[in-house]
Length: 303
Ligand SMILES: NC(=O)c1ccc[n+]([C@@H]2O[C@H](COP(=O)([O-])OP(=O)(O)OC[C@H]3O[C@@H](n4cnc5c(N)ncnc54)[C@H](OP(=O)(O)O)[C@@H]3O)[C@@H](O)[C@H]2O)c1
Image (cartoon, rainbow, N blue to C red; front, side, top):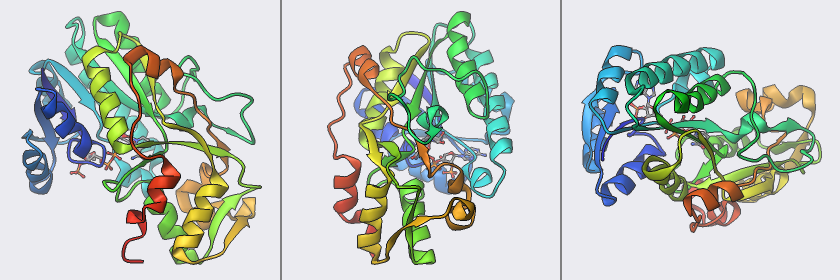
């Protein structure tokens, strides 16, 4: 299949591109800079210079492809405080890609996050692929992509764990939490730290995204989850030990000051199941879990 991928040069894209190429697909990756183009070409794909703001360019690339995977996201805007603006731009992008694919029968894989299902305190049961949220930032894009199934698109959404981890992860939430601990001198958690976060290894996530492209039924919500829920305090403990700082509760009113924009989510319980995804696509995560991967040391090299 000739596959158009946005975000091909990013963390997860850097695993998806080689996975697709090994699966005999042809990859055309959106690149907004020479460096991104070079990364895509080094991984065996073809770079298409462009930007997420060029909706006409995105439509043309989607029409020319046999399938689309949309991984790009304006994380820079999100991290610097324009969380809503990043989500609005993303919704514009999925609408443009969706319009181009309408009535084509082609696959369109969108990305969302399990954190949309998270709650303060403790969930009474892990979130499942059947759980939905009516609307909200990023959620509107997820629901739009799923709705494309009614318009002749084999659309699916992979809801990724907030912690997609591996040695390919240089600026995700795991390195951010490590940096926060190093700069504040405390590896923190909220409450008793028993709230759980799911996690998935980058290579397992990439395999799932490939399977979604190849054979997810139209309208599938899929969970990119391997560890169903790691207690946040366990994560903080590994970080504290490796960074050599104390592991301590952070007062709720200090959460934003300590964790920055992550303060909104660090205390949420996001235990998430993956049984439906595994069965539907015969997907089996095989790479190390979060704690094993963190203990392997690559996240702390040079500290
Ligand atoms: N990593 C995680 O733990 C995680 C967890 C849950 C969900 N997700 C979601 O999974 C998707 C992929 O995440 P990731 O970790 O691979 O992200 P990433 O490493 O930050 O990569 C983002 C990609 O988007 C591209 N991009 C950003 N702004 C762009 C623009 N204006 N025009 C064109 N391209 C642009 C980047 O291009 P450059 O290379 O040029 O910067 C890069 O290829 C995102 O939707 C993310 O929110 C990730």
